[in-house]
Image 1 (spheres, helix red, strand yellow):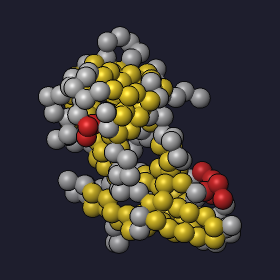
Image 2 (image 1 turned 180 degrees about the vertical axis):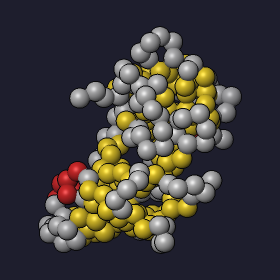
Image 3 (image 1 turned 90 degrees about the vertical axis):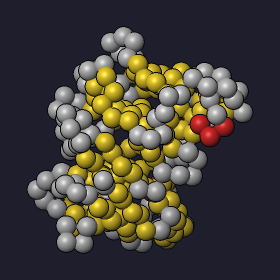
Image 4 (image 1 turned 45 degrees about the vertical axis):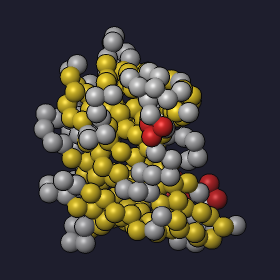
Length: 116
Length: 116
């Protein structure tokens, strides 16, 4: 079975400061990893994903994440926070039990607050 | 850009009533999913569906739940006799032709179900 742990349910940063949202995973097979963002009362939007290849993945809105197998981590970063980044962020791992479909397991989410 | 749509955006019902949540996946997708997010909690997998059959379901998806693809475009989630604890945001998702682990799941905006 796979699982995802997000450290910190709430993170506050000042506008312009570094954003670091932590995610650790466990999976019995090589994982595919995702970060989703959810704005209030909205659906889930994919920020970025790691499948294979380069371990540093760049996504939308200036976010990036690095897959570190040895640390079983997939932390999300952004060099400079904007007010518009305030949202809830979910880390997720994907596995395909069989037959070509996939099941995504989500972390508990981290709410990012950006302070002016 | 193709998107997953869901109706209604908000459904209020009385305990014990049946509800049907509707989704229109992206037109050339073959794999469909329902997830649930209780307020303040993480997104949980309910069920996946492929080739007019359930591929996998979670423990949450008990006999009160059913899914159907009644025509070539809609994908529905039915709750036969709603309970207070069914109050949540329900997300529909779909994946494309390959359906592999790395495929992005495209999520709809969600239906907020409130059971009174």
